[in-house]
Length: 454
Image 1 (cartoon, rainbow, N blue to C red):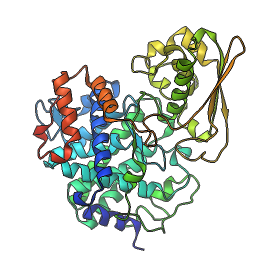
Image 2 (cartoon, helix red, strand yellow):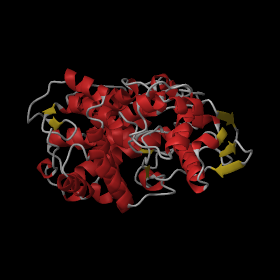
Image 3 (cartoon, rainbow, N blue to C red):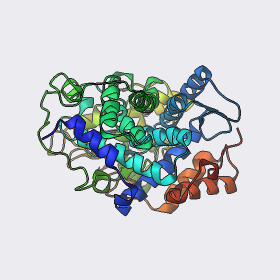
Image 4 (cartoon, rainbow, N blue to C red):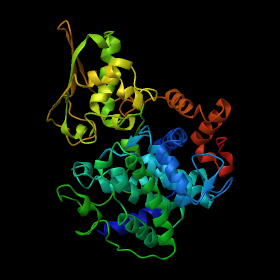
């Protein structure tokens, strides 16, 4: 087999929109549309404002628009700002299948920024998005232990390399330069799970997109890199591997099957870390189905696999951002608010006395099981709610709503989109943007995409 890095380069250079299965086109459009919504929603979050303040903003111009507004910046800067805004509320999609990650915050951001700078068509954007996704999974599947177990944030590490592949496709690099682009990105990839619950986590997504755009441009300009940077025993895959058990011998699936068609995307219905979503579904089903009043709850027990808890690092959150990565807060919020909405994931709600008291009633038990290394937890995960009168109510946990196995329809995606952009766009403009993104394969120019007013 040829070196993996070279095979990735050849795949990127040979990608053709006409070869894409319809399911991959549909998934890419859904991912980009969902990303647009959460990017607009996150544009005023502190990390987005901070990064925008450091960018060279051009009023009414620039290579690429910032958060779908009237102003722009270079594509390298826009990728950083937009990716961070899109991930700032942890409301963006999830996917990849082989490890927990946020593909559209990286890939959608990359193709929108560099695609606009290069004047590419919607078909080019879709092909580049799928290119990045396929490279991401093809590399990620070569280690059976998810990288976040060791402390690496996959969105920040594998995402950077995948973004370089997407940007290289947009720049129409040949196989050698495309391989150089991913190798250059591999030397810039990095991001720690320890930074979850802080502004640095959304920075990871923006930085990955920025690395992708920059790496493809450097390769296009002639910068060299090792043609075995991915598979070398001193390279990307081995360096990140939690156990050092990496498969670099199996030939890639490129072109024979499509990972995006197989794994799909999962869309978040709650603005929380995805590790909480199964628990939120289960708790909400219990409190709504049995009409449980929060004041009648004595204890909440949850049994989960160990991998589900890796990202849920905050057991006593003090802010809304910290609460996004707290299983205790997720369950308390569901019990008290009977929902999990943007209005609830706030500093004020986390600080409420009843919320803090309910968090102390949560008991977490780690359960080993068949799927402990997978993204969906163990098959025995469950919630048990004990009421003050001694009644015990149980709910088993399954795939969360919005998961590819439990997909949501177009009406739900539009409702989320409309809710996210309500403060930034008139209803007609919002619908026009959503429809244009859902018809991206027909877009010939970025002038077809409506902008927000400010």
